[in-house]
Length: 115
Ligand SMILES: [Zn+2]
Image (tube, rainbow, N blue to C red; front, top):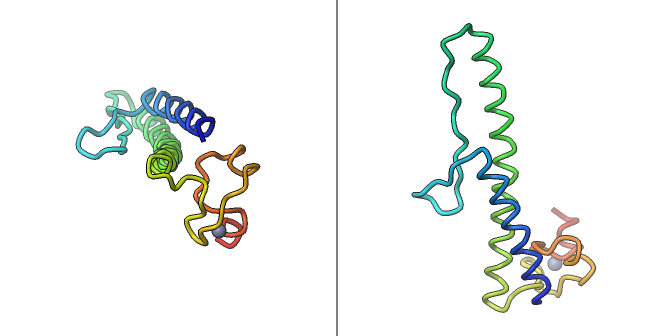
């Protein structure tokens, strides 16, 4: 359990660092991050298109990182509540092998496979 917690905290720190490299944390909504929208350059449209494209790539990454961060936070909550390692769907214990690979796993392998 302690090992899982350390792994989750480490992952959380890494995700937050990655997010903060291009997004600012939304102060109103906990756990929400905003990607900084590019200023539209005074130069030609071509340049603007490039920035907008970069923005949409960033949004995509932000979404993925945010999702992972949410899962990590939820797993930490489950540890706090003493519900860690129990499948959120069928209530069985999630195997140690699975938790070693993804400590934030919410479902056992059987249930995850059905989704
Ligand atoms: Zn299950």
